[in-house]
Each structure stands twice: as structure tokens, then as C-alpha cells.
Image (cartoon, rainbow, N blue to C red; front, side, top):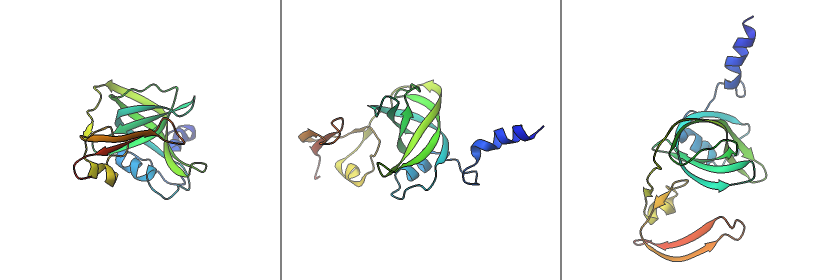
Length: 168
């Protein structure tokens, strides 16, 4: 009589015989940006604020950037889930490894919207922070002179800006 209830409550927490569920944006970003490919999927359930919705990957997925206020990450979100910059959300999904693209990524399969807030302000960055990789998946504001701008040869939605800022 209690077995189905027990399976329903503990089933989603099981991952390879453990109860590993990623609970913070920081922990998620460590795995997503790790160079080591995942051997198996890892579930996540975490609170975040949507910072940027760059656009569609396909007719069923779009990219989504989010933060917990200190760490940032990007994920692929199912298109049936409608989120906007500024939404305070609880995100659910799994981190996968893509053999075809050779990287780990977060697949957001569900989201609860707790509130709609203002779009987070851009992070004031300098060239050194960008060059160090401190601004991954962040909307930034940088001051400088644009020396060149061009589209990526493979992905026309990706645009390069060459900016002279300070000494870099």
C-alpha cells in the first residue's frame, strides 16, 4: 500500500543510485562549463532570475540565460515553456552531454514562475573581465570604441564585436 507513494517521492531524486540533484546556479554552471563530458545525466531543480532570452535553437528549443545573483548559466529550454527576462523562476531539468556538439548543456524541461520582475541591469564589465571569461552568459555593459563587427561564419546569429577598451 505504501510502495507506490514511496516510489513516487523518491524516484525523481535517484541518479545512478544516489540522490544528487543540482540545487544552485553555481553548481549547475560548474558542470555545464566543465571540459569533462558527463557520463550520465544529472537532474537539477533551482531558483533563478531569467537575465536574457537570446533566441531559438530549433522549433522545440530556445536558449535561456539565468542567474542567482552571483553566478550565471545558460540552458536550452523547451519552447512550450514561456519565460522572459526578469522572471523569478524555479527551473527543473537535466544536464546532458551532447555527443554531436561535444559539450555539456542544461535542458530545462519545466519551470514555475514565482514573479515577473524588472530585467536585470547589465553587468559593468571591462575588457580584462571579458578576456578572463568572467562574463560568460551575462549581459554586459562595456565602454570603448568598436573597431570591427562581423557575423560568425558558421552561425550567423552569433556576432563578433572587436572593442578597444582601456589598455585591452
